[in-house]
Length: 284
Image (cartoon, rainbow, N blue to C red; front, top):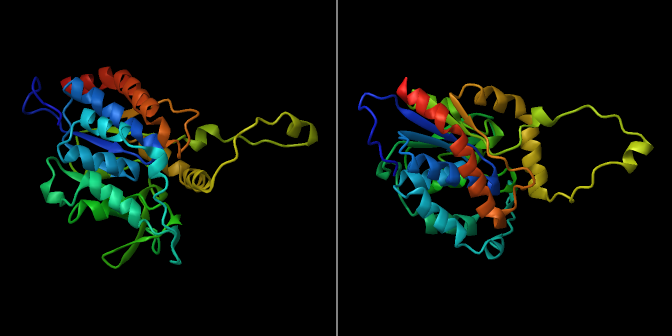
């Protein structure tokens, strides 16, 4: 847990918003490691999708170094076999094996057991509402938050059918503000589509010079689709943060779980870059 020595007891409260991004979300661990080393206090966390997993582990009291060791020792090629096909109408993968994996690392804890306040977000697929979960089972909340629509079955939670929170908002800045944060730090690990979109007219000659890219899998297509449709919402949300951290993750796909070490390292670099701004806000 982040130590708060060296800061006034009347200091501003710091909230961290951790966005979704599948394997790219490992970068959150690197950011947290730098904040810990520099004794930057973290008073509350809100997470979406992968951000909810990292947030759940950190708010339990695990250090960033412990989380990093946990992630790096996993055999991700073996873990990718945790696909249990579903006959459900709401998704191709049942997610029972994924839930078992989550339980092995998160445990069966309640939000009231956590060391610092934590919330994770999901989307009610029937109403389109953003659902903030901060009570009850942390495991059930995280399972709902990571349920990529179509790919995973929707998570039935208190009468609602919930899917990935990133469908509504990739980085829950507003949520952490509502939790009482005076300073909000947003960590975005997904490409900002609005920065990448261009209007291109293609003719036969241009097709010959088109950039060669690896064929995307279903997961990548779904994630790109989600990012595209909510890109403006994401930009608006990120603009509300006091500090925005965006690790350089070009070339790392959502399913590149074997590149966890690179993602964490890029998170560390991005965390270092943000330190001066964070310390200025704390000292103000």
